[in-house]
Length: 60
Image (cartoon, rainbow, N blue to C red):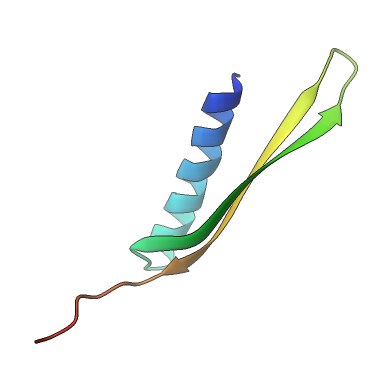
């Protein structure tokens, strides 16, 4: 898996979990990459964090 694909997979997973909680937005998103080494070269772990929120339009 390419790094870009891993990033997209992590973000998609976070969005799916947020939707299950009733959120319609995620704020404070952070993407981290960690080198775990590995016997066949580098293994990179992609971690995505953020805060799931429910945003509503103000009533006039």
